Image (cartoon, rainbow, N blue to C red; front, side, top):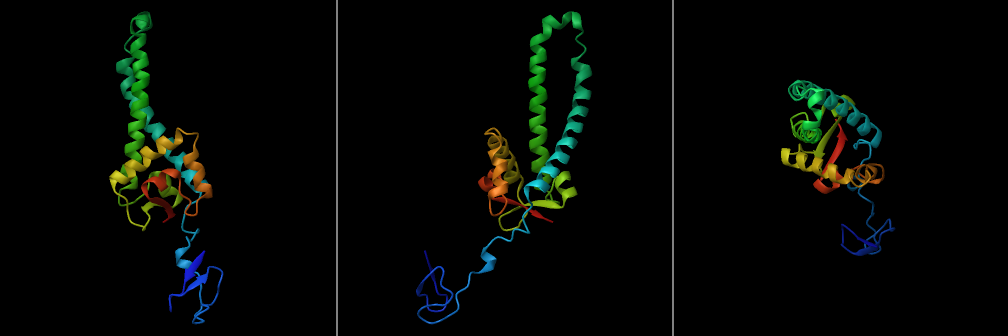
Length: 181
């Protein structure tokens, strides 16, 4: 590989420290390399996720506690008549969970705080690649991407460990990073 001298624009080997043509000092611009101290790592993000999931589980239980008395008015002797209904209720609860999760993460991460409750506790925020607040649409797509990559054995999370900017696959897809506040 080659690099070009900023002074005379002559081509030099990447490993060169001085331009072979004009002796101008060649150095790698450290601002081009990601500063890993800015990007939140896997552990901190995992703890934030656990905090958020506990919160969402509590909210989900409250929703279920509200809906269950209406649904459970069906007493056991009539269960056989309504067992298909119970399967649909399970589907409804999973749908509520997915919708609640998508909107919680999207609304919180696109808000002025740029963080969910868990991320706020852990001192991290979600930004675009330039450090700006993300839109609701981008936050929503980030979590749709997260659902899709999670379906493939969690590969979307493993990339946080190995990528230079500590991005999950879903972050790479939509162009976001998680950084320290």
